Image (cartoon, rainbow, N blue to C red; front, side, top):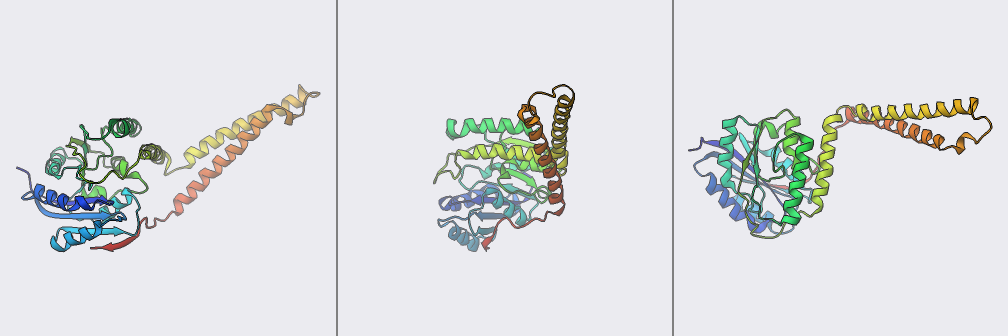
Length: 317
């Protein structure tokens, strides 16, 4: 028997019209007599099919259904961010709209989150119904790299089904394509109690995936960005200033060596500009100066940065 709970379910979607009604029915059936208060937020990320009409119909018939429609396709991170801003319940869950995530997992995930005192719990699709070569293998490599760089022991960082405490999602800023790294963002915000639960993975029933093979390359680059920002985001001068200083010192050292060598030991041979050491010294000093200026500008931008809207809403219900 599960302890009653309040739950917001956030569902980002793009052209998933056929899945929305069965998904809503599945969620309601799975949470009946378990959720004392429920809201379902569909975030339409610029769909070109009839997804928004279906969301409007569901909202007019069921009071727990709410919807946000973006002006254009901004990406899953922005859709989740919009949902996080509007979620009001004690617990917040995310689901993909393609019926591959089972809402039947949510009560047990909330129970485990409470029992273990976690800040968030992430699903782990241990058995997947995807192509091994194009999705499973790249996913395993990606998750291995994410574990190594982040230090968080999750098997499936990008699993669509997750449950959070409300204070967690109100404390993080999901942007760009950082939805893959919400556990990392939460950890950086001080929410380090992160758990994992094996969940069922369903075969896609309608349509096709909206993500191409390039998502793994982009995801790896985002991971490097996240690692760098975590280490040096608040003090960019610590990185750029350090390497700029090292390059300047080496460049000045080469210059001093060339000057002394020319004045006292090699007075009759080639010009300094004909020696390769001269160009090494010049390159090092130029790069060192640029790194140092980049660090200084980074500090100025950090101190004067003001957040701006990352998406524009066309309609809301």
